[in-house]
Length: 158
Length: 436
Image (tube, rainbow over all chains, first blue to last red; front, side, top):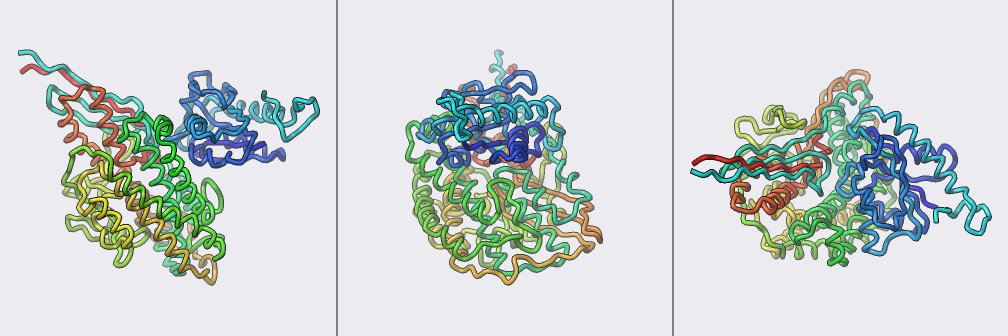
């Protein structure tokens, strides 16, 4: 399973995805960090079958809300990804769909952010949400496979 | 005595730009009223953040200002600090820095030409809609951009926030074999870039020329990246150390980014068009020929044609990367030691969007006392407003939706990196009733 945390730590709540990846690494779970730029992301998950992407989002939900989407479905509600780049995670998924470059399994965790300016402290609600996403990903990674046997290389999203 | 309807060109979120800001244009009858490019993000955080930090941290800290052009920030930072400390770098390190910059130019120009700007010319909302009809084009762009990424990753040490560039050189340098492994990809990229020039040259461009003051670095025997005099088509010819004598930054109420002007003259233009017009003779033959074959000769005064110029610069970046790889012999040491010393140093390098100025004052412990950073987008900001004042006048007869779209396209011609300058561009054009 490939886990990718997206965002920019220097931009307050935009660092949520990066913080999740760093926390997972501390716990011994391999995780990548990326800016979340679409082309880079499509390249990053090219050879992976099973991918989890974490990014900060702005959907209008209360700050710190964690949402999960099946990345193989249209992500209209995630189009407001708050990353500071021209093409973000939602665009990466849409573009990858057209170009047949979506991984077999793709789960997207979105952490609702509030502040995205450089240098501001991360919102406490987002800090708590980071821990929640970490717990959920650990559960995903260690969840029993469809057959019922534990298999850390498969997710049980579907 | 009836007045024309008041209209506002209003683009609340200008898509396909890097960062967040908004554009407001007021049309009063058939006259253009206020034009304001508004940038919200507080830009000066990084300058304050650098104070009190050791100079060795500056390349890594400033690289975080922008996700698209971190190399530019690193290059201006290391060169300015090296000047402050009197550090002379190994010629092999200089060559590697040029290669590093080529990687970023390939990434950034590919992103802008294909993903951000081409949809404007082909009538698509975005690259996603474009990809449905032009799949091969988008596939090519992905491959090209990936090749730029490979260079940046190899020299930068990791995929995001590169960490290998250092004052005095690099923390880690590549082997000749690692560079040779890039050659096949780069030869493909060079061909793909030549195709990009032909493809972009076939697009339709609005008829809009302006009398710009072009400002770019100029070097005696290279298409300048990291070194050279700052010159313009109006007689400017200065060293980086004189930059603040000739350029001033003005605060404007409507933007968090400062407006940069040439003292006594006003707005100016930096970026691909300026470089091409001032340094056409320094382009390698393959890029010059591609430009001429595409009908492009200096001076190019139509900002919409910057998409073709970026493609020409893609050709240059691929050819230059290949040259650097062929000439590369590893330096004796990855970097030279830089002493803690009092000093002030300024440097200008050519970021993909134009010149990027850095100045650092250091104390005897090597700590940064003051830092000043002037990114290309804030330098172009006033010029974008001046353009829109002229361009919007041509558009008053158009339905508001089309006028708005065209203004957005004009702004995107600059590839504004507002997250550098300070984050979305919202465009608002307002029309007001006037009585005759």
